[in-house]
Image (cartoon, rainbow, N blue to C red):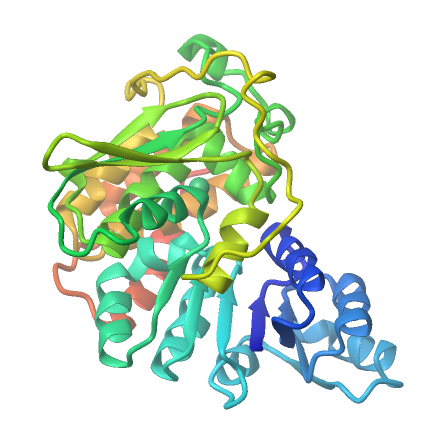
Length: 381
Ligand code: MN
């Protein structure tokens, strides 16, 4: 029996995790649930899964949450600090980190320091502070299992390979809803169009990141830290059908790929049960129905964010933190209709040039950098 704390239980990954957990009641127990703002869903989840603890990040919602759970024996907390403290509690075995963006960094660090197993869905944590996270996970013997589908695929391809030499990782990308649009057309796309992802049903922030391919850039950075492979040996391959979730090419030229339906419940389950596999009735890929699987190179002229992410990880230091902060600000601006799609990349480029570069940042430097980069990005629109 694994006792699980879900950070971000009302989001896309959180709700799908609870769906999986409910299918294996003798394998998993929900110990803690946290959400940012969605009191109503959090309360419903608490009623159904009977956790020991629930925590709402936005403290304004505390009274409402407390009231709606008054008849249950659950402990109710509020605030980001409460979440960061909660993750180290003794009974928790696994922390599923599925908060959105930079906010996931602090609680993930605390969970690692408590030696918890981390099922990591929050890629921004590794984008912002990959070096620090890797160092801490070694020091505190905290195992990090990827939830991101591409990284789960690579993780599965590497299973049983020991120290066999890897030539490169082939990280697949759907290309998003704008893969076939020209730069002129991209000038005029709006948030509603960007939110219509062809294959994956995800939260708003990551869906915009997918449309701009920043998501794939972040995944290159995530893969570097998770698997210790330099970005020059991580190749992004556009595969619009999202059936091949990624591949590993070994030094002998052999390539292993992991395939399946684009359904996040599979990588979530694997992260929670690794190295075991469970019996499920999740949708199966049917090759007689799928038509062709195709592969092509990404267009870095059109999707500049992908090039920026490579540049940022090559430069290292706090540059990935800078790019992440700038991206969170421009994605919010784009969702509000305040800036255009292509303008997001222009602003990110300017912030990368303007924010103070630090080669060997500490945790405090990341906090400072995040704040500075957000300020610069916000001042540009
Ligand atoms: Mn992914």
